[in-house]
Structure formats: structure tokens, C-alpha cells
Amino acid sequence: MDTTTHPGPASAWRAYLTEARFESLRLWRTPAFSLPVLLFPAMFYVLFGVLLSRGSRDAATFLLATYGVFGVMGVALFGFGVVVAEDREQGLLTLKRAMPMPRGAYLFAKMAMAVLFAAIVSLLLMALAATLGGVALAPWQWLGLFSVNVAGVLPFAALGMWLGTHFSGAASVGVINMVYLPMALLSGLWMPLSMLPGIFTTLAPLWPAWHLSQLSLKLIGADAGMAPALHIAVLAAVTAAFFFLALRRLAR
Amino acid sequence: MKSPPAPLARLRGVHKRYGELPALAGIDLDVPAVGVLALLGPNGAGKSTAIALLLGLLAPDAGEVTLFRADPRRVATRQRIGVMLQQATLQATLKVRELIELARSYYPNPHPIEDCARIAGVADLMERRYGRLSGGQQRRVQFALAICGRPALLFLDEPTTGLDIDARRAIWAAIRAHVAGGGAVLLTTHYLEEAEALADRVAVLGAGRILAEGSVAQVCARIGQRRIRCTSAIAAERLATWPGVTAARRDGVRLELLTDATEVVLRRLLAEDPALCDLEVERAGLAEAFLQLTGSEPQPHHDLPEAA
Image (tube, rainbow over all chains, first blue to last red; front, top):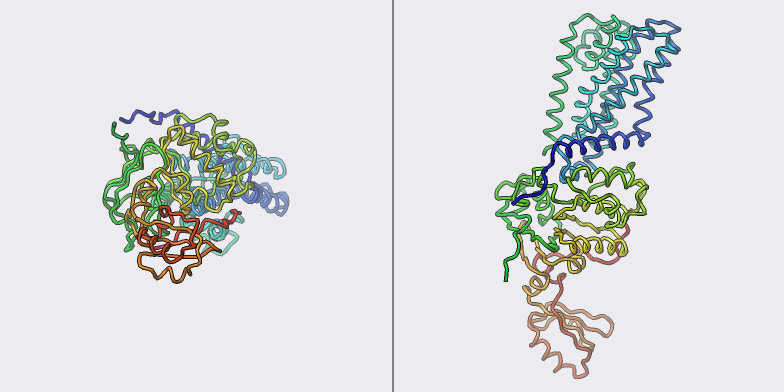
């Protein structure tokens, strides 16, 4: 009876890759998304890490690590949160579910887009740090920071996606900013927590961004001294929990 | 006479409710392997729910939903269909060519990209961004995505709502071309004129049930009404009170009335007005059938605004 071609691995991969390519292109062509997420971390870094730190190489190095985390959070939270909210609201997600898009291609495409943007943000910061900031690191440290940034997309993509399943496109921008900016401050991404009241340091382990920044800071010997495995475990749990919750809502 | 081919999609005893609200109260529906089936009904009749079930977007509470004798929730099953949903906005920043290329990547054996463009009439729009197209152009692009995978069955949900007459006719021509190539279509529409123009069969849905199903002529015949038109001086208000007359109105010198007792009413008309002329009698149309079956007015099909 059913003699039509079933999707071989080759055709499913074609869908995955095409979806990822056009998702990246789509956001690249949306300046309201691509300019802030790509340029804000670099601008803040130049301002606070280079100009206002008056040539302190330690400050420039510390802030390279934390602004990298800040940049990646923005890419993942907005790229997943706002876009998922809009796709849902505009019926695009329903259409894709009705069309024979392979399961998982939507998530894969968004993830590929976020990894690409995170890599650009990270490389941009590193270029500024190495030139204007006078930051000197061993090759394994540069590579380590880059890897933490790219992998750091995961927990915030999950969190963003979960937020995107709850709010409209317009509302999600505000909601995500209310998560993004306070968490960045409370996790010590803009300035070291030691410059803030002690309560901030006590609460810091509650925020996923703090755990990610600890992995980056460990690479430059400026972390709080906890085991990396602990941070990785927390981030993995956050990723799994929010992806689970988000996918359950989307499947309804 | 050989038996018709098996239906491509079917609902069997399907129930679906949203909380306390029943959307479908046990319906059976077959989508034939060729031609256009139009699913009609007032808002809230259950059309969208029936479509969502057939597309695997929802699961039924009870009953059976099959697409090509398989579960519509499987991707491989849906690779044999094409979909155009009314409430879907495509990616505004992608070009038409890119949107078609993306949709083609979902199918094992799609049409070449230029063929998709030609069938849907978007060849001159390929390098334009979707967000910058007019409403009619956007619908044609959505149609191109729907047919790109050589679907055996096309789901078209209100494909021409909000379009002007030229844009509507362009979509109709594309639908007819798909059917001429051996494809089947499940169409939902507010415009009975559209169903009359395109459909081989219609199913009328009301309050979660199938109220009538068959060819357009069969559904119209089911209600047994005739439309009588003539030039006469008899007052429409008085005519409306005659036994057997269900509605009467005047349009200039022309009188138009609906009746389920044609012969009786005709004899009386001719007897009361010897000057009566230009007499026409015809079977009542889908609009009257729809009204009688569902108890609600179909959407008016004139003065359509062009979608922004």
C-alpha cells in the first residue's frame, strides 16, 4: 500500500541544514535583533573593560570572560525567546508542524543560529581584548573562553525558549530583558561581585549565568574556587529542565 | 462500473472537545482521492478542528483519524500532503526563492524550484522579501510552498479570504491546475461562491456534526428549494405570506422568491398577474442550502477588502 519514499537520513539532514541556514539568514537580516546582540557586548566591553579600567590588564581580562557570558546570554535568550514567541503568535510554528518538517529541525536550526551568533560575539570580544585591551593569554585560554561561550548557549537557549512559549512576541522582549539584565548584574558580569554588598555573593550560586561565568573565570584564574563539575552539573540541569518544559508546552 | 479509489484521508466517529466545549461530536468524513472536497460551515462549526486533526496537530478524544491509512502525526505520512493555513505568517525577511527552497527540503521528491514558482504564479517575485509582498502575492507564495512537494492531497484553509477578485481567480486557476494533474484538495472556505466554482463535493459542518455531504447539486437538492424569478407587479411583502414561499424580495421590476412548493406557487403567480413575464425557475444555490442547514448566514462574498 504505502509505497512512497520514506525520509532517508540524507533527506532529513538536508531539511536540518536548510532550516539552520535560513534561520541564521533570517535573523542576520533582522537588524533589530542582530545589531544589539552582536554589538552591545562589544560596546560595553570597550567602555568598561578598556576605557574606564584605565589600562588595567587584569580588569580587561576579567571583563573579557564575563562579557563573553553576557553576550552569549543575549544571543540565546533573545534568539530563542523572542523568535519562538513570534513564530508561535504568527502561526509559523503551527504551519511547520503541519508541513513535514522533520521533528527536531526547528530546534536544531535555532541552536545552530545561536551557536553561530555566539561565536561571532565571542570572537569580536577577543579581538577587542587582544588589541585595545592588551589582554595576553595562552592559546588554550583563548580556546577555552571561546568554547565556554559557544557551549554556554545551551542553558540560556532553553530558558529563552521556555519564556517564549509563555508570552507574545512583543511582551517577550520586555520579559526577557527583565530576566537578562538583572541576572547579568547579580551574577557579576558587569563588575566583580566583590565590589557589591556581600549578599550578592551569597545569592550568586542561584543564577545560571554565575555558574557559566565561573567556568570562564577559572580559565583565567579569577573564579571563586568551586569545582567546575559542579557548575557544569547546574548548567546541564537548567538546560534539561527548561527544554523539557518548553517542548512540553509547544507539543500541546 | 469500477469502484472509486480509496479515500486519502478519513475521520471515523471522531469526537474532540476543548475543556467543556465540544468541537466535534462524532463525525465521519472521507476525503476522496481526486477532485476538490470543500468543508463548509459557520464559525465555530468545527472546520478548523477537523483540519487540525487530519494534519496531526491535534489528537482526537475518541474515534479514528487516518491520512493515507496511517497516523497523520508521522512526518513520513505528511510528506504526501501540502498545507496552506490561513493564520500563518511566513518569515518576513526571507526571499520567496528561499522560502520555497526551505519547504522543498522537507520533501523527498519535490518539484524543481522554477516549476513551483510557475505553478503558483510567483516567478516574477522570487528575489523579493516575503514581508514586502501584497496580500495576494503572499497567498500565492504560500500556495507555492503547499504544492512544492508534489502532494497527493492539498489542504487549503481559507486560501482566498481577504483577497480581491483578481488575486482570488489566480489562486483558483492554480488549484484547478493541481487537480487537473491528478491531485486532490481539501478546501475550507467562507465563500460559497468559491465552493461552487471549485468543489466536486461539499460537506457542510454545523455544531460539530456533518449536516450534509455530496456533490454541490446533491446538497442543494437535499433542501428541495427552487428559486423563481420573474417580472411582475405583485408586492414582495404579500408574496412572502403565501403558503410555500420561504422568502421573497424585489429588485427593481424583478421579483425573486424561494419556495419548496414550486408548482403551487407558480400556478398562483400566473393566475394573479396575467402580465407576468420573463419567468425563470432554478434550483436554489449553495447559499440557500447553507442557510437552511446551518441556520446561519454565509459570509457575504462581495466588497472584499484587499488584505494589507
